[in-house]
Figure 1 (cartoon, rainbow, N blue to C red):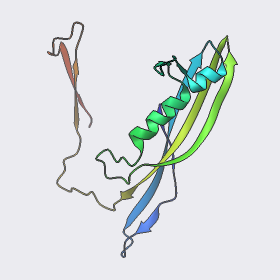
Figure 2 (figure 1 turned 90 degrees about the horizontal axis):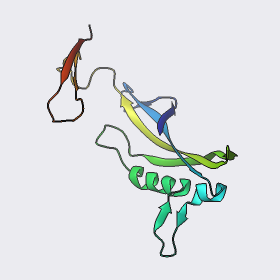
Figure 3 (figure 1 turned 30 degrees about the horizontal axis):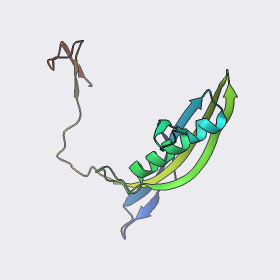
Figure 4 (figure 1 turned 90 degrees about the vertical axis):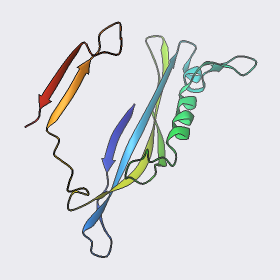
Length: 148
């Protein structure tokens, strides 16, 4: 799960100080549970050959790091940099061991005093297509919502 953890204080940017740089922090939450115990929920389980049988929370954190490190996803933001890792839960509940961790990710974006594309039209309508089972690629129903 990814959540917006908050933004810092915007700082003026450039010689005219008309633009503002807004820091933003996101948090990735990962969790695992195991009937084998709390250690297995953190580390997971592998067989003798090293093949992963159960994924633990540590592995999920590492996978998230590989996916997010230095990424901007084509958006007008600074690349993501890693922040603090926090333990949220390491408990046994109802016979299951649970381990939940979060890792902060930092970025920043620019706040402009006027739209970057003044020719961009306002978003006035939203179209939604509904696909029922079995999905044949043709919408079974559609809605158009006017946002004015």
